[in-house]
Image: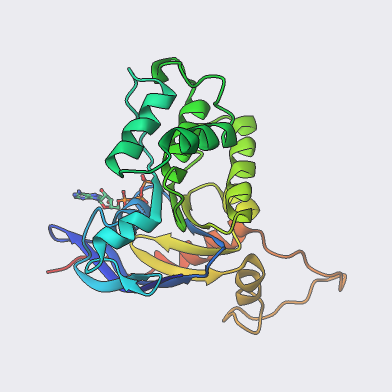
Length: 264
Ligand SMILES: Nc1ncnc2c1ncn2[C@@H]1O[C@H](COP(=O)(O)OP(=O)(O)OP(=O)(O)O)[C@@H](O)[C@H]1O
């Protein structure tokens, strides 16, 4: 569904994305996992046509996103990190503006469907300023799904939410994926990536250090793949599989031995 090939992006003389390549299969939930400043939002901005790459290319549904920007925008939805809703307007009005911009047919029915799907139908006439952080995040999801996208991009969807609301949001993401919508999300929460994503890319200082399913990432740390000498456990008991946090620390610590990436 999405093919990212050798993506590079620099701001002034600092490389922010350094030769990033990955693919996302149709219908999967793909997670870009990284700490603050890793390059997650920049990747999202490029994939959603809000920023241009310096080099490399991205194909969505077989089409180059730079050359077919309008078409790409018509088949994707974005849940941005910042809650860029109109706080003075109601939930209904926020979606109506989006629908009018996209000249959506049957707009009232579509708004009703999405507000019910995210559990905000009863609050539809409330101004957004009265919404909690979790409700605003759900409204952002409803807005992103209004035009029935094939791919939904979510930039740090659960940032700032308490654990209970975060778990509700995860269920919403699972429901979206169950409808066949491809989901690409960024996160710095290990648990979120592990619980939601079928495949994970570890992004660090602009480089994609590793990617795969959790099982594939775990296998990549096994002795046959590692340069560390194999030390059998003293009791010959089966050693526990590394957690995603172990894997993340393994790859990111290794990368600290390398030179920081600057362009001349
Ligand atoms: N418009 C810009 N101009 C200059 N530098 C930028 C710009 N946007 C991002 N950067 C820099 O690029 C790097 C990656 O930023 P980015 O927002 O993509 O990271 P991130 O992984 O999304 O971080 P966070 O989790 O904090 O959102 C950071 O060092 C940031 O300061």
